[in-house]
Length: 322
Ligand SMILES: NC(=O)C1=CN([C@@H]2O[C@H](COP(=O)(O)OP(=O)(O)OC[C@H]3O[C@@H](n4cnc5c(N)ncnc54)[C@H](OP(=O)(O)O)[C@@H]3O)[C@@H](O)[C@H]2O)C=CC1
Ligand SMILES: CC(=O)N[C@@H](CCC(=O)OP(=O)(O)O)C(=O)O
Image (cartoon, rainbow, N blue to C red; front, side, top):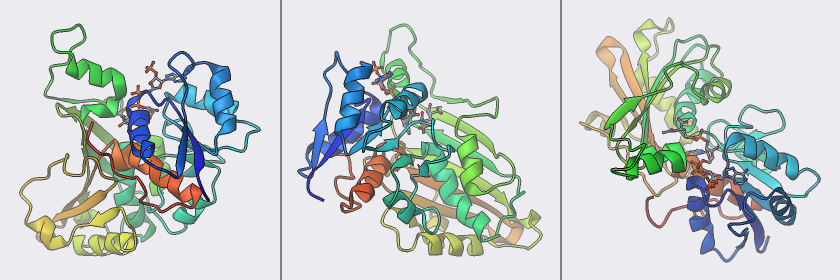
C-alpha cells in the first residue's frame, strides 16, 4: 500500500496528540485533521471518518461509541483507544502478542479495540500462564499497579500541573479503584481466560508517565506444584518472536533491587520480570510499560501499521516523553 489516509478522532487529547506526533513525520501517512471549531462537530467528524482508510478513536467512551456509529457504511477501519469496545462482539482485541493467532486476527480486522494500559500488563503476564495451565482458571488473582498521572488524560494532567490553582492535586501517591470494579477488570478477566474477576488495585504517583503492573503468585498453593522458572519459561516462549515484548532473563531479575516505571517511556516496549523465592514457592511477576506507549498510542500505531501492511515498527517511538 502507498500512502494511507488516517483520521485521529480526539487528536487534541493526551493519547491523540501522542499518535499525531508519531504519524506527522511519516510520508506513508496522510493525516486528516479537523479545525478546533470542527473537532466536536458530528458532521465534520462523519465526513472525516468516511474519507479515511483508518480512524483512531482517542475519545471518552460515549464519544467513541458515537464515532463508531458515524462510521457505519464507510470503508474505514477503526482502532478504538477507549474502553467502549474491549469486550464487544465484532471487535478484535488489539494486543497482537498475547496469544497465538492474535497478530493475524489484527491484520485481518476492520474493528480493533486497543487494550487498556493496565490491562496490557496484566494480560501479558496472565494469559500465557492460564493458557498453559500453569495457573488454574480459578486461581485467585490479584493485580497491583502504579501509573504516572498522564494515565488520567488531560483533566488529571491539569490537576497535577496547575500548582496554586483550584483542583491542584499535591498528593505524592494514591490508591483508587476501591470499589474493586475498575473499568479494566472486564477486559482483564475476558482476555486472560480467568474464571473470576481479579482483585485489581491501581494507584497513581506524582510522576507523569510510565507504569508497573504486578501479579503476586502464591505458587505453593497450586496443586500441580508449578515453579517460577516454569512460569518464566512459558512467558519466554510466548514472546520469543515478538518485537515489542521482552521477558528479562531470570538472572537479570534476580540482580534487581528496584524497578523504575519510567524506563520505557517513549517506546512501544513491554518488559516482563519474574521475581521469586523458589524455596517458599512465592513469585511476583511484573510488567513495565509506558502507559502512553504500549499502553495506548504506541500500541495504536502498531495496530495501524499491521492493518495497513506497513512495517510493524514504523514511527512507533515518541520523539520525547509527555
Ligand atoms: N491516557 C492514557 O494513558 C490512556 C488513555 N486511553 C484511552 O484513550 C481515550 C482518550 O484518553 P486521553 O487521551 O487520556 O483523554 P483526554 O481527555 O486527554 O483526551 C480526550 C479528547 O477527546 C476530546 N473529546 C471529548 N469528547 C469529544 C467529542 N464528542 N468529539 C470529539 N472529541 C471529543 C477531548 O476534547 P477536549 O480537548 O475539549 O477535552 C479531548 O481532546 C480514553 O477513552 C482513554 O480511556 C487508553 C490508554 C491509556
Ligand atoms: C491513572 C489513570 O487514571 N488511569 C486510567 C486508565 C487509563 C485510561 O483512561 O485509559 P485506558 O482505560 O484506555 O487504559 C484509569 O484508571 O481510569
